[in-house]
Length: 247
Ligand code: APR
Image (cartoon, rainbow, N blue to C red; front, side):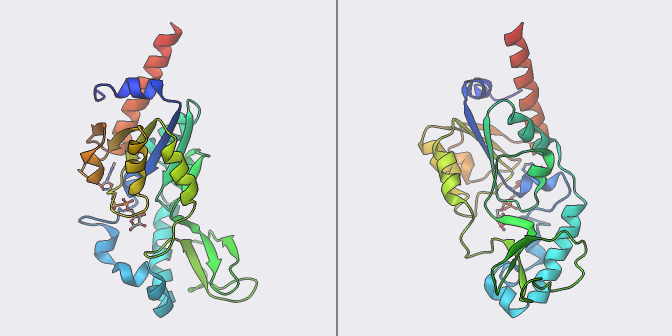
């Protein structure tokens, strides 16, 4: 059963935005960051996810990312990613993700804003050249730029760095009818501000997360479920509604 009123909100919406976090990829076997067993429990953030950490020990940072690349290369999109991709056929639909795993695109989503970059992209710290590297495992650690021989870094956003495409994200949040907030602890800014912004512009906020988060305080609808279960339920109901309309 969907929360009361959610189906009406979805059926009346023109533009829907999904803000996703690590929780949407958890059922694909990719660990989340916070909480017990989370990635940040095993690795000190300041060592592997800051510019200072990278400058101090690029090899350690690349070993951490090499391990994550192996994990992500083996992962497949789950039903939650797949349903979001299908929703692009029904709506003006956008995904804003904090994830760097590329699973939304693998599932078929095309309208994806990657706030925190992408784990398969590399950037030269000397000449700034950006490219893709899909080697798993990496042949050389730390990898070097083909053009200038400079040190490459993962093209992901570390703590203290500005996120990508924030203007696009703000504009989508300000101009959507429904925002699905899926699998994020909503603790990292500016991403965590997007649902609040959407809500202040009268979008309906739907939280999908087995745990309470700061978004729970103002969300219009809450589904305390795993992302795959909740998204399958939503999609089934949407299909049923569109069938009824045709009959
Ligand atoms: N379905 C839905 N939600 C889930 C599931 C699931 N199957 N499993 C876990 N969750 C929820 C957790 O309850 C938690 O609220 O996903 C959330 C994951 O939170 P975080 O690990 O903090 O991940 P995220 O919010 O994406 O972190 C934001 O922090 O460290 C940085 O750059 C990193 O992009 C990341 C950012």
